[in-house]
Image (cartoon, rainbow over all chains, first blue to last red; front, side, top):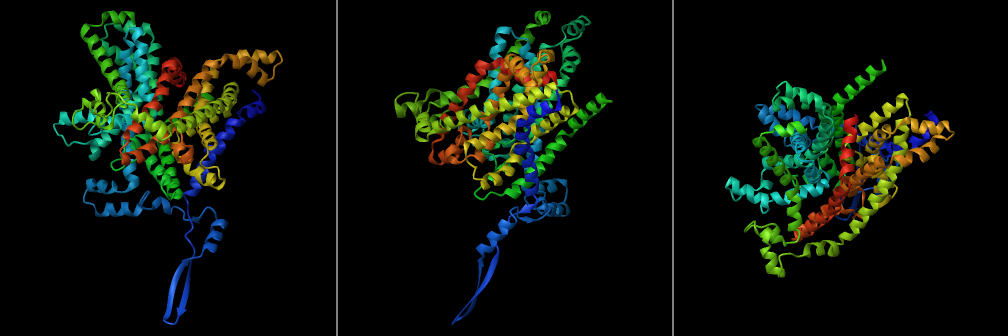
Length: 342
Length: 293
């Protein structure tokens, strides 16, 4: 295809991505270095028969003029990055000096909003992803042994947790694990503790959020692995059987190596998606126990006063996090590509 | 797998079936439970006294004389005017799907038919855009939208959703077009067609399976979106999902959680039908990127 033709075909989608993805990234980075102008204050002295009083008031005109001249706000450099709501350099330093051991240092870090969110986001990402891959693999192997009339039926119900809107799915689970819901009742009965409530305990809340994450994403892994199983080389499997491989050995040495590229693919997609965990926290009403980086940004943006600079700063930090998470994949793709070109 | 299945011991077969039954219960039971419970009153759905109330509807029968009641649905759809949100969602989904398919098809086709190096880089950039959490972009939109007075309207949300979903659409359509033989449009060009004519007359007629699958996923992305719609739309233009989130805030104080339950079931129903009708396409779409990449 000629460059010219390519250009015209690709122009609409390129424009959409430039204007609504690339430009906002630039704008978010810019915003994170600026903070809104403070109001210009004027001190007026009112003198009367009983003496003088000084009165401070906002000079509306000057404030408006300043805002019009520099709409981005006041340049503060990296100040917002280092403030208490974000990297909190000062507080971290203090905690490091004052704490007795690593345990108390981390518990002090847990009080800082950014680190609290980071801790949950990372735990969620790195617990959910391997767990859902394992569960998805197990379901795929099991479904593959079914009679083919049953397969369609099982796949239909398996798809539901993934297809359903994340907020809706998390609400459905949340209502069931509510202390008055059916699962909540069951858990109370199992633990023999009638006052047990998931909402009251941080640990239990983290576990329920992670269970939701596995529940909602395992179907994706299942479907991908199931499709991979359909392309299994039958003769390799048969020769393994003739050589006397046990069922477990067949899975370990034939099936898993065959599915390995798909595992990488699912892991990549799920790392990206789990890192942005947000809806379950809203659905589970869990912000007292668990917050995520996405939740902080949403919270900054949706309040009465939108804290754009704070949200922008967290956004930049989140983007950096995604970059770190994806760097191994990008490096590998680059190597493959460079290898192919040479 | 015919040989393998003959050799399975009964114990293993039983274990596998039991595992599948357990998984089916985990996957489907929450939906059935909520559907059943949405026709009860709150005291049954959230039962302190006895969990079987949720099944039998004892309190519902006491109040309304029948174990089933549509009060939750009536409250959500009529009192809270959930139908407006449903119409907004339909509007948003329709335009997001058609627009992203139109521009995505052109772009994906171009990517699959150009052998130059920049194609690789464009795909990598699209992958990186796909990896960005969508919410990180929103604080970039808001000041501009406020300045231009476009905040709060449905078309704004539609354009944002289209653009945000382009990377994904491009990847998917690109892999579908790769599977259509290049000889097809090359020979049309040899016969004197321009590139666009070749695309229009030769490729479009054979690309429908890929377009339908990609369209399904664009639909799901638009339908399921909570972040963009809740931050970009004004209260009067809300789509279903942010409306449900808003229900939670207002109804918990008024004791009308059942409105939210009914709205949740109403929002799930179309997805149920969608999976039932398009199961094959969804499965093929999920695996398209995986098996080829």
